[in-house]
Length: 589
Image (cartoon, rainbow, N blue to C red; front, side):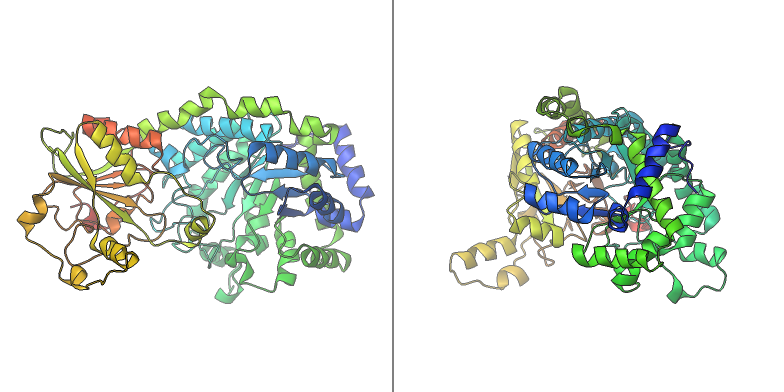
């Protein structure tokens, strides 16, 4: 069932004997516990002790903490774990999601824009070093989805692009960099592949529409590249494959379609049998609607294991979910053969890194190692290099707009354009996160330092909000009739920068009847559109004749942007990793 001598385990007979004897000695509760990951809710030792001793967890994950707190938590988890525990994080952009001081390298799309696999490897190298230094041992990364649909916001900023060859090369480079640090597992996501459906599996169904032949050429090529390269684990996505299922199971009805995490034909038939993956499979988070909307939770938990997933990501209610899975095992819904197979993969991976032979200090490391990894100057240099090589001039129809020059266009109006807050952005506001200077403030300061008279546009709606806050009477005429002569509008600046900072959805233009927010005036004076977040703003502002993507608004990115603006088109080194024209003809003209 599982070849522990083969890739990715490479176990000797003594280590295989440990796996087999450990499984044989486990109680039913200990066996079931190894199937679960839990998201820790506290770093209190009493809580963590109870978590490990009550539920015998196979894996844990956590939300962002200072590095020292992560290290202390992980020491506690390993201290009370009878079998060493997987501890994972989401280092999709480097170390910044490992701990709060972790080193940001670049989002997948930003690295993809450079076209340089050495940057993807550097991102893996940083991730691996900082994972180990914090006492973690598994990366839920890289994201190996392929952005075929420009409206797929769930993964568009996280993937390396829309070309399967590039995604395969970048993902393999990331994994190789990760594996430069001994003791760190790679768990790529989200099998069988996101990037086609505009819907988000957290909230709805998500569909991969390829049949077997097309899938094997694209997503299959990516996963086979990683499997051949030594990937230890795969995260299964809650993704439907209707065309594939109609091919392998003729007569299946639409109502019978299941996401990969609940579907044996995908998780076992495709991943195990056709791709030959011998490693471990963990589900994506079990609260996502793409999984929960298909059956009762009591049926869903064992169905995921029976489909071929070896581990289940996150309790809903720990006592309830644990009891559900335990009952499924004791009553034979999960049979002994399937249980032993899953446990063999789980313990086999742990043995492959020698976790069963290490004490807590060896599993988690020291404060000195943590400080060295978090303060590595080489690691900190990568984001600057990637920013310089990723800023992308997507559209440039009006020659002469660039380079910017104070003698030619001294007065620059920056028009900030935001989107509607999604749930995560709203939560960050409630928690007080996201402080610091805005992208428009950063850009304005840098342009002023270069000799421009730059200023930030204030919309009529912003003025009305100020009046309301001051207790003044507000006139709707400012919105409905607040237009002025073209000559008056253009007389206040020589050039306009439409600065998009839209994290989800579409731009929330504040006014549609004149004003400066919508760049209706592209034929009246020079206008440059710049997106510092979602790279798809041409879909909503196709009239822009010069358009740039930076992929984030970090200080080093804004430095690279301004340097390129004042140097000229040749300074934009990035290449579009997706279709930033969004498949629309009018965005190109």
